[in-house]
Image 1 (tube, rainbow, N blue to C red):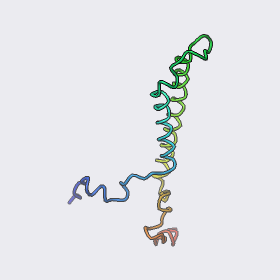
Image 2 (cartoon, one colour):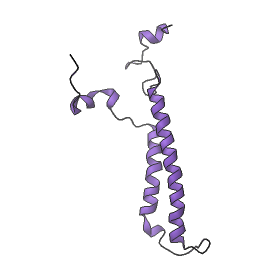
Image 3 (tube, rainbow, N blue to C red):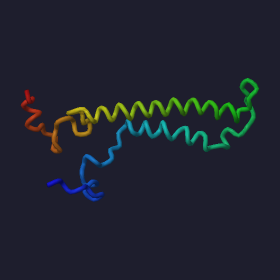
Length: 115
């Protein structure tokens, strides 16, 4: 008989489904949030001086942020992919210390080495 489907109540109780805030995820959030703030704060760049190659500051500032945003989005993507790959690796769960159980002790497979 198949297992019953998980409801939002049972999924929230499962430790594997709970969101984890890691330094990598904080950096990813900042990489995505900084360009948003920089471009939404229009009063910080709504002027004509200094000009760059004849372009007013208002225009070249926004074009510069197009490039910066692309780089920051790429960095965020690479960090997320690397973090997901590390979490999928067997024994690579960095949050619980690999093959340790919740109490911090090694489980039987970890002690034997399963060789």
